[in-house]
Amino acid sequence: MTATTPTLLDVQGISIAARHAAGLTPGIVWLGGYKSDMLGTKAEALADWAAREGRAFLRHDYSGHGESGGAFADGTISRWLGESLAVFRRFTKGKQILVGSSMGAWIALRMVQELRKAGDSTIVGLVLLAPAPDFTTELVEPTLTEAQKRDLKKKGFFEEPSDYSAEPYIYTRALIEDGRNNRVMTGPIDTHCPVHILQGLADADVPTSHALKLVSLLPADDVTLSLIPDGDHRLSRPQDLDMLLRAVGEMVQRAG
Image 1 (cartoon, one colour):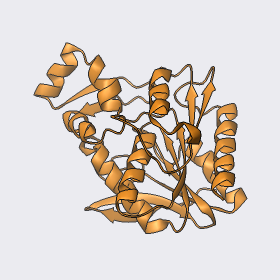
Image 2: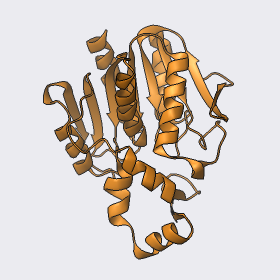
Image 3: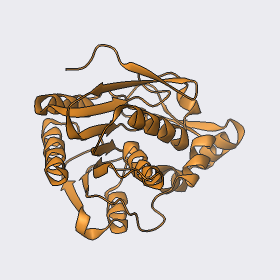
Image 4: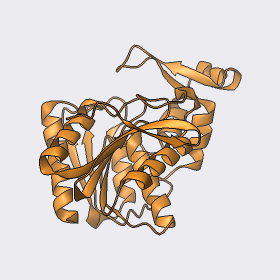
């Protein structure tokens, strides 16, 4: 059951909206995708599951998303990472499992790096859906058209129609330049915990090859890859949600 009003946390002068339910550990932390909000289908399904299990659950909206303040066009991976870390540190206690969707998977991998750097080893599992780490350098930059390059140079952004909303996607020069400083797929990635990746083979936004490249950089004995033959980028159909909840439930058992 969704709380009617979120808790607002001031992060560098921007109001970040979060919803937190206390409960058993390991707790579940949801990290949404680019232009997604914390009341989406997958986040809600996970919130309901966590409530039934009596398990702690945390989610938030990045700045420029959902119920948080700030402008979407001002967002960068560094900014959204900083907000995610602030929310994580404010609300969680004990062991946690990060569940990241699309760009949220990139944020999750960066969070593990930053938390470990600070001596925090509370992340005990990652569940990544249609993961899009390094999407700015790996997926956006290589396919830029001359017109898009021109827009980036002159206007500082370019727009692309979205399959998921009437509003176009906006990609800014700041997002792309900052993305280069947050890359995680430049060599082996040590997550220090098990990882379960769910990838749809019919994903038009993040190709399966991207998930396979990510798997190749993770410790083989600790990574599970589940390919969904007819799954798209959203992975929001009832059967996809069942698979997500099963993956999270199994990760809880492993991390127990």
